[in-house]
Image (cartoon, rainbow, N blue to C red; front, side, top):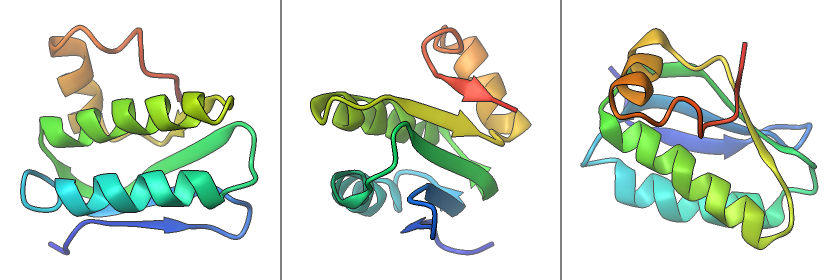
Length: 102
């Protein structure tokens, strides 16, 4: 498994990859907020297709990214959310809050 990363794609989307847990979360939080500020995309799209493993930290990151996008008067969409993360969102009652597509 690889360390968690968040990068900005060519179309302005954020790409989460690797492991999202308490060790990688703080760095991903700061980096993601910075990338949302730099992105010109509207809505901001977060692609989770390369996430290898996630704890509840992954869901927390998505919620924080939503708040950051809202601060910039933009919306956020999440695509390719892994089943593991979808299950965590369901159990925690957050599935209806996260703007998940596909």
